[in-house]
Image (tube, rainbow, N blue to C red):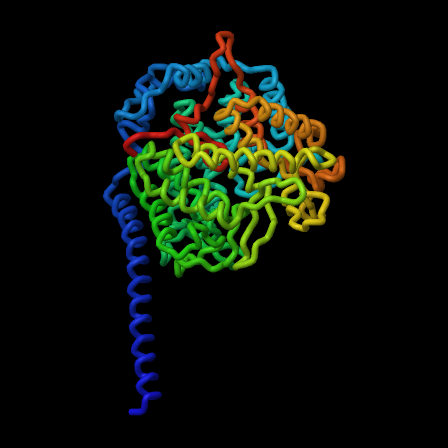
Length: 559
């Protein structure tokens, strides 16, 4: 046999071995997912209810839950018990008690934010009640999931603001009209963060069992998304047929879609005593962490069949953002016991600082760009502004102090994205100038100039104020709120804009997250000292983590 023939034979042998390894690995991944799904089917066949438990919620304090709906009496209250969790302070207990007794203290600015919510709510009631979202200009509605999304997404905002009448309306609709038994495809990520998160948060705040019952029903209908060869969930689920598939455009699942369900699924497991939700969601993070990355940074697409990344683009904007957000928040949600999440997050933030954070020209604004393969782009979505608050929150919990400094710098940049526009509102996407001869730091392309009433900047303002007590963050938030009032308020609610460079360029869409997130964070930002000089902190950051739709979920020991 010649040397060339021997070389060909060796290559063939190596190829066969590698093929076998890949096949075994793929089979093992599929068996893991099949095993979990089989556990679920076996429990169901054995008559084990995932909806009943003698102790549906063990949160952070011993006291009876007093349901807020007038049809429920105190004699039906359930006793919440503790598993040696962190103790709530009197201040924490007080804000929950005040909400449940409709004794919410509001500052003057909070009153204005609550009025804005009520204005939007009235328009929604009049022209879109029971539908997903309001179109305030055309006095109509839009249907996405067909679950009354605005109601479900914003009911915890109503509770936090202490709006009794609006709560009664929303609660009754959820109890009597909301159904998930529909032959309709929904996005796993969106319905989890908005609907499941909203229901779980409303249950935690109010103690009303109707929200937990609906959350359990929805959670069960989302499980088919995980029935994939890799355990990486499909992006879309049909709520009625118990089927799931990839996106309609034929692509892969995005990083944020598969890695931003973990807070909600873990808490649902905790409440129901059904570990399958947590196991399936945790399995996704475990598999992602086994993949090759660049300094903790992940590409934005992942294939549900192979479980491998399929894109070279790294972004903290759309389709990537909340993966990084939830690494930190999973560590916090587990009372800092699951230290692997902290390690994943620190590695990723080191990668962000090394590869993505740059300074603009000429005024040295700190921004977060993207990587397209090996090429850097100075593009930054408004969505990226979440990172400022996330970095500050991590530093507040013992992570490197430089994270707080970067968080402050990014917050300033995000505010400048508002302050430098004619309407004083930020565009959806900006580019930062890297030309040494450039005059303007921030560049806005015509197709990127729209504003969707997004919350990420006011979210970071809220967190930065809570941590630093610097009043400038309140002032920034008030300026943004006034701009929303001037530019986006219309007769029947609020409208997103086609361009922040033109006055009155209405887009005719009121996103549910304006009520669920933007107004909630503004309301919380404007909390103030009481008469004795003590800070009133509804939803304290040492007792709650906010999911990526601003739904607060409790930090719990011994998950």
